[in-house]
Image: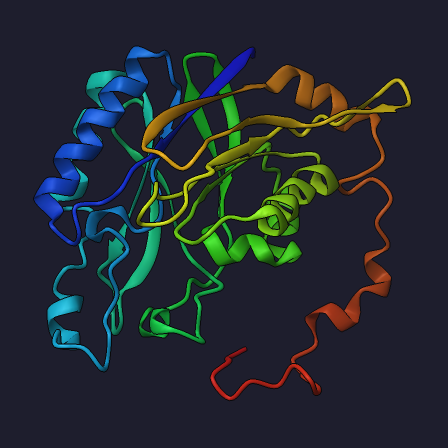
Length: 294
């Protein structure tokens, strides 16, 4: 095992025009492949440019739900073929057709053109328009075959990363790298929070956001390795600006594995027998919200 290169595809979408988004995504994937990427990572819900049903707007819910796609639809089939053609994995995001309301999902397509994992966002933003989505029912980790060797990949989407439990469960399932599609403003607090997810779980993290003016860019990646020979150092691999672009984050997986074997975070010294309150369904003031579900 050696270096794994993840291409952060920081783009603006063409609204909810799926054909235009497909073409633009195709072009960015080809650029990523030319730069030697092993994985291309899209921003959140790319097929519809993260457009959502607005109950107060002119578009009805049925029209919005009709934009959802499944694994046999042209949008996904195209990128399966592209991954095989380019010999490169693609983490493709989309509004997923589902029983009832659609899901906000990412499918990891391996370099052979097969979907090896589909993850639906667990922490949907129930306080805004995303309440129209069906939340995911669990966190996923898979083994991805790359040209450099096998690596264990997990995924979380946007708001998921603001809960430490998301990355923690992925680490406990064996994730070495976590892919994170995003669609919101990234400031110092959220980026710092994301950095902490890498540090506390000894896992590499990579996040792709929409470019300005749709969002504010700042796609970012942090290494799992942040401490050596009693010396801490900055684990930042790359942080984009606001403009459209393709940003390459390189992870040394051998170094990550050696680090996880010797350092103290992750699952080395946890005390799970004392953490029962973390799975309690009870909510007390000031955190009670009428629109929240458990």
